[in-house]
Length: 186
Length: 187
Image 1: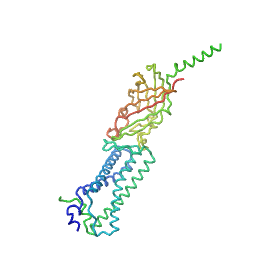
Image 2: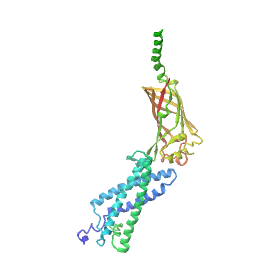
Image 3: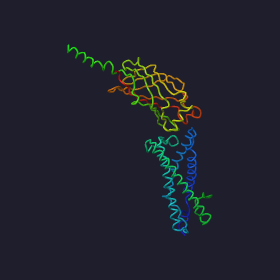
Image 4: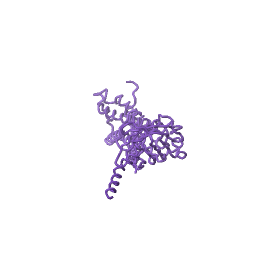
C-alpha cells in the first residue's frame, strides 16, 4: 500500500486542509442562506446591514478559496480509494473542479454585480475594493441573475458532494468521509 | 450725421459687455447639476436631483447686492436605486407629499478673493430652516459663467432619515453636496 511508503501524509488530509474545508462549508452555507433571505427584504437598515455582512463574508470566502488552492498545490490531497471505478474517479475530479470554479466565480459575480449596481464593496466598512465596472442597471440585473443561477448550481453540486461522501461512508464503507472529519487527537 | 450714428452704434457695442456681461441673472437648468454623495455602512453612494430652478442676480463687482433663490423638487431625486428612491420619498426621509420642495434663499454674498465667493442663506427642508453658508467659484465663460461649489449637509439637522434610519451607522449624517450651475449673462 502507498500508505506504507508515505505513512504521514498520503492517506489523510492535513489539519489545515480539513480546517479550510469546514470553514468554507460553514461560510458558504451562511452566505447562501443570507442571500436567499435578504434579496426580498424591503429596504431597511437591517437589509443594508445584511447586505454588508454578505459582501464581507463573500470576500472572505474568495480569499479562503485562494488560500485553499495554494495549500492544495503545495500539499496534495490523499489519493482516491483504489476501489473506485474509472467513471467514478472522473466524476469525483470533475465535481471537485466544478466546486472550486464555482467558489471562485460566485464571489466574482457578486463583486461585479455590486459595482454595476453602483455600490462599491468596502471590506468590513474600511477597505474599499475597486469597482471593476461602471454603474449600469441592465448589466447589474443580468449579473444578479448569473450570481443567483451559479449559486443554485453550487447547491446542486454540494448536494452531490455530500451525497457521494455519505455513499462512501455508508455503502462502500471506506474512509473517504472520515478522513475529512476533524481529528480528535493530533 | 452718418459718422455720428456709427459712433453711437460703436460706443453702444463697446459698452454693452462692460455694462451687462458681468451681471448674472439666471441659470440654465439643463446645463446645471446637483449631485450628492452619502455614506452607507462605509460605502460612498452617488445620487443627484433632476429638477430644480434658481433665480439669480449676481454682479461680481457688487457681491453685497447679490441675491439667489434656489428651489429643488425633492421628488426628482435619484438616490442610486429605484428602491432607495421610493424609500426617501417616505415620511422618515423627505416626506415629499407634505414637503415637496427644498429651498435656499440667500441672505448675503461675500467675495473671498480671485473667483471665489461665499454665499450665506436660509436652507429650508422638511419644515426645518437653518442658516448655512458655502463657498463657490465663479468662472466667466463666453455666454455666462460656471458656478461650482460643495458643502456638507447634516441630514439630522432637517430630520432627513428618522426612526430606524436615524442611526448614523447605517447612513452617515454628513451628506456631501456638489453643485454646478451654468449662470446666464445679463442682456
